[in-house]
Image 1: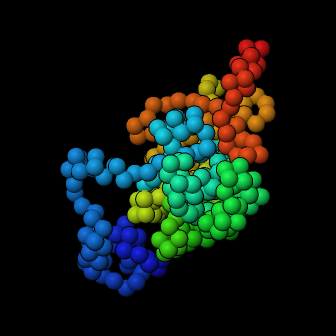
Image 2: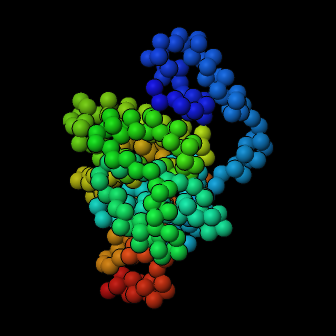
Length: 305
């Protein structure tokens, strides 16, 4: 049923064990035993403060984005990047796959990456370019990226539901779903399909956060957007998935293009404890990079015009 480790069992619900022919009482007993083995229980806030020290951070490749996120992407939480086509969502995912393999002193986690691709956007050529720029062996970096293409929303959920053993055996510290909503959006069409779509999205995201917490990994999802024609003021672009995705993603970053060139704008839209903010970065052949002072000045001049 996809439960290969104590960690994933500890994060399960009794209902998820019912198909195995286990009674509700027995299921609760099994889950409690698993939780006691990994220490999931009530704790005081000062103990939680101590536990928060185990949360690690992964660099995005850009110092300004890392600063926007208070040091990088957090483990044990979901970070969502959403935006229109060509805004750099998949490029950031590629960069993170390389960065996670760096040592901690360089902003990495000394771990591997698990990449679930629903839009066929993963390119090994980009991994090679980014690896060389960081002085890493591209072949070794590629060995530490475990890839799976999801062909349907059911297949996408199946991949994550059976990922716990792969994550544990390969020291995976980054789990990517790119994109989270593409299959759900194309398969669940019409207002009458909205409720079942949201229920399955909810289940899928809760599985993702359970894996991130169990294995102290960074979870990243990319999300498509839709335009709301009835919005006359402000940005009419909104992420797919509604409140379900909004509530489950701990940190949401909205990506959009600058007027021209490789420059992109990252806006921190939602975070449990960080203020909203905005920074610019660029996507180049080398990967995700900071914008130079000269480029910033040029951008400001173009805004003035």
